[in-house]
Image (cartoon, rainbow, N blue to C red):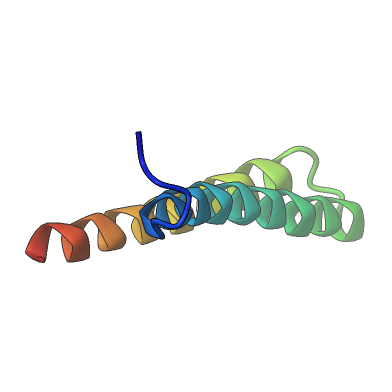
Length: 69
């Protein structure tokens, strides 16, 4: 069990939060595009996929950096 003062758990929590925030922001921006241009549901779908991909990129980049150390 990790100690409470160990900062390692915070890194993993931040990575999960990055994926969730990227997905949410992509969906919000996609919803705005859908309202503005009437492209239901494509804006939300594409925005969500791009947000998820950005979060996964961040996760992979952090994993590669951790593996290097």
